[in-house]
Every structure is written in C-alpha cells, then in structure tokens.
Length: 195
Image (cartoon, rainbow, N blue to C red; front, side, top):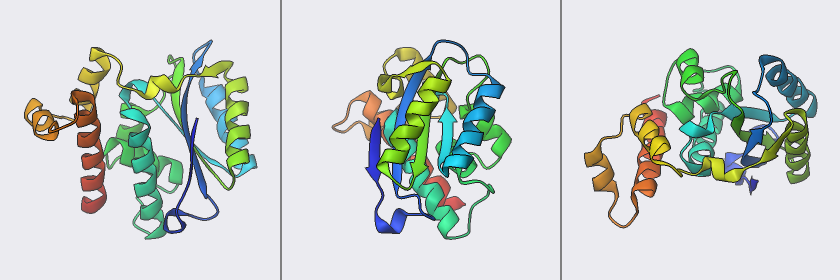
C-alpha cells in the first residue's frame, strides 16, 4: 500500500494521510459487504472509495483525483455531498454521480478493487485496510493498478476518449502507458478548471 502524508494545504478536516492500493478477493464484492465497509469507515472516521481497478491508470490517477476533490471541498465548489463521491467524479471526469459510479465504481460481480483511504494517521489507514482485506477475504495486489495488458490499455483509451494522436503527442520520452496516464491526469486537471 502506498501511503502519503498530505501537505498542509491539501488537508481537509483531519484527513492528513492517504492510502492507495488494490485487493483481489476470493469471492465477488456484494452490496452487503460494501455497505459493511462504509459503516466501518464512518465508525473509524475515514473516507473510503472503491474503484474498478481495470479502469484505473496507476495510483497516480487516484491520487490526483483525490487531491482535486479535496481542493473542491475546501473551496466549496464540490458537486457531491460526500468527499468519497467527489473523488469518484474527479477520477472519471464526469459531472453526474450516477455516470461516475457506472464508469469506475465497483460492480457486484467484481472480485477486485482499487482502494483509496483518507484518515488522520498512517496507523489508522493501515489498520482500516487490513480490516477491509479481512472482511472481503482478499489479499493486497498493488499490481492491479498498473496498466499491464493491452485490454486494459484499450479500455482506458475508450473510457477517457484518448486518441492515438494525443498519445503520440504525449509520448516524447515516456512509453505508451505513461502517455495514457499523463492524458488521464490532464483530463482531471481540465475537469477541475471547468468545474
């Protein structure tokens, strides 16, 4: 799990740390399990968002979306009433919560999830993540966040409407995977400005 201590200007409420990882579960994630996770997150005073890792372009995608969502909340320009949903909006570049959930949310049939946790301490994030792993009967698989197949690459190109011309323009020194990540991060930045 990657854990980041946020800069002073990036802290919202008391969420000073951000953890990002992915898990692979033995069984599909059910609505009941997801509701249990949300209930635990409220009790633990952490923010959690799950994503379909097949539609995430590395940990950077989640990190930048979260920072932009935090900034939107701090500046009172958020669309969603919950920080976790605002993060999902930024990760997708969508203005409608329903569209964002359909695009990057975790469906009932999926056995893997990318996870973002915001909390007030590194220890709390680690402990909460371990609870999630236990609850979902899973194991950490950070490599699920990487663009490791042609299928995932094509899916990202389609979801974020990235053209081959855009990829080649962004490729200067990066490889194609990094160019896709850069293009998605650029879209998040544009979304933040347009919002």
